[in-house]
Image (tube, rainbow, N blue to C red; front, side, top):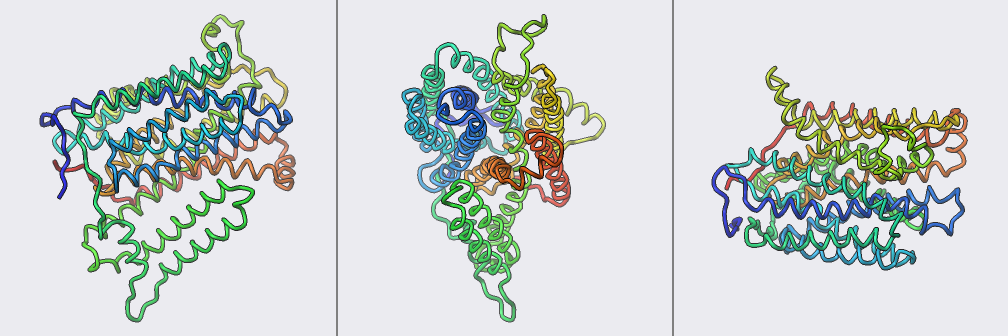
Length: 529
């Protein structure tokens, strides 16, 4: 059996001394990522898409942005797989970070060349996505049963530093884009990514290194395969029929839509395979007992239950990631109150800078929840579970979009609406993010069987891709004349209609999540030593 190794093991019950290297790396990496991500839509609208008619730029900018985000959260599947099976988390993170740096270089060098710029986005999606599931699970590897009670504190600190980097990136990069141009606006994040790589490399002798898992005859996919193919005398194989149906539907989607909507088709096909294949395996999972140990079968069943949780959360990401596209475009139609004495005109001059509200509120809400809200509730015997927090986060996200839709209705009537009103939806959305995303990091690690940590974290991140997929599908749908006519018949603008639609999407997901959470069996998969 292979064991975790470290040059300097932490004292029993103490905070691991290697954690600052990981958190420092994450802070710089997040500055680099959000620095380029939060100026991507304004840059596309003002520079790279000028060849398009003005009426088409917003839609194309949203498509490019959300396609990029889909890539960022799709490639964790690759990163998690090669880490778990071949190179381990440390090596995979280090090498993917170099790809990441190369992507930033492309953005800075090819800011006026569409092919080169899009290739840079691809490299960043590959590099950022490749390391994304590994850094957070690498944090979990530094803990064992003796100090796992500190893991939640560190995960919250981890999420806090993410937003620390995001805050300054959101404030500074729009200014750099306006005053110094895109080469510097994309180059500075690249420099920060190089610093992040150096910090991570500097801690190499202190980390707990959990080696990659060898080929396991009782791994998740092999248990699923056995469950689907196993025969029972006198009984059919309804689960296999369901899985084959999903595969056939996936192939049909690829054939019909891959040419015009490649990203949508690939993700939809993958979703069909996962949904139908997972459901079929769950129907016949007991057939795998005997061929595989009970622990392997129970672990496979646990993975399928976790994937259902992840699937229900996907609408949250539909709402959350549009703050960097739809909400910026809404901000462009609002009035920045520079004449008001209370408005910080010296700091906030661009609609894109409103995104800085999100990280600063996260940095305030995480300690407030941990130091005030949760201890207060515990005094009355109320312990809020991870699933309860995540379900509540979906509700707050829906409320944020109801507020944004109301603002859009006022804009559509011709009123001069102050951009200061966007503070309210940002605050509600951020509260939802703290409850869903920060909690989800800890939940995903704690629920994953030991040999599936990286892959499970990849599926958690893949849920973000599907959240952005819903945005692409919706954007494609509203280009259909029949859909456009129905929206026009509703008496409200297309933008307002879509905002109410996404709010309803979140409320529906929250209801389904609450029903499922009542029957979810919580696991504890922290390592024992």
